[in-house]
Length: 247
Picture 1 (cartoon, rainbow, N blue to C red):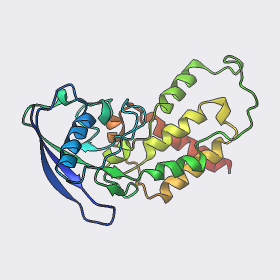
Picture 2: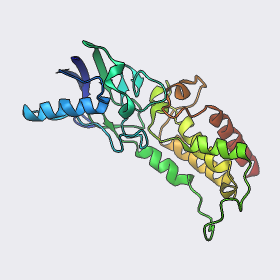
Picture 3: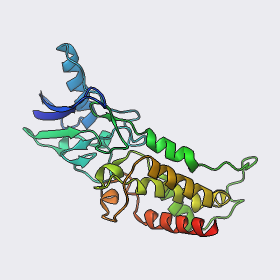
Picture 4: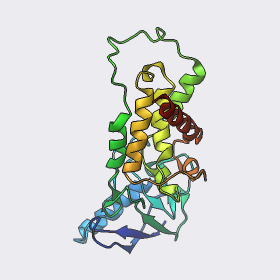
C-alpha cells in the first residue's frame, strides 16, 4: 500500500514546529507503525535529509516509549495497544496519516515526535517506591494477601508510564498515572508503612510539574494502552484525604 504521512517536525522545544508531508510506497500491511517509520527514515537518510526523531525501545508494548498522536488519538485508532503494536493493516491504501508528539506543558518536545517525560520520573522519585528494610526474600505465601487486593494491585502495576492518559486529557492531567502508581503499593502490605507520606509527596510533585486537574471525563481510561481503570483515581482521592486527616 501507499501512505501519505503528515509528520510534525520540530528542532527543539524552543523552535517553532511545522507539519511536513512524506509519501511512503510499498508499505506492507504486516509492518508495525514504527517499522514503517524506519523505512521512511532510511529513505530520508539516503536522500541526505534529516531522519524523523521518535522514541522507541522494546517494541513489545512494555516500555511505553513509542508515544505519539496518530490521527488525533494517542497510540492510534486501536484500543489497548501501544504505537509499536499498531500494524499498517489498520490503515488503507492511499490513507493520509497525521502524526504528532504529545501535547502537554509537562511534556516539552525534545525533537520532532520525541518528548521529555522526565516529569513522570520525578513523580516516582517523590514516593513511588518502598524504602523499608524488608530483609531476605520471603516465601511466596508467607505474607497473606487477599486475591482481590492482589489482582487490583497487579492491574494497577500494569501502567507503563507512556503518558497517553495525559495526552488524551483536555486538562493534561496525570491523575491516572499517579493513581495507578499509588494504588499498586497502597493495596499491598509492603506499602503500608509509607502510605500517607507517599500519596502526599506524589500528588504535590504532580502539581509542581504543571499537570492539569482531573475533571472525570474518562478520556484517560479510554486511550490507555493497558486499560488502567479510573477507579484508581477514586482510590487516590481517598488515600489523599485519609493522609491529610492523619496529619
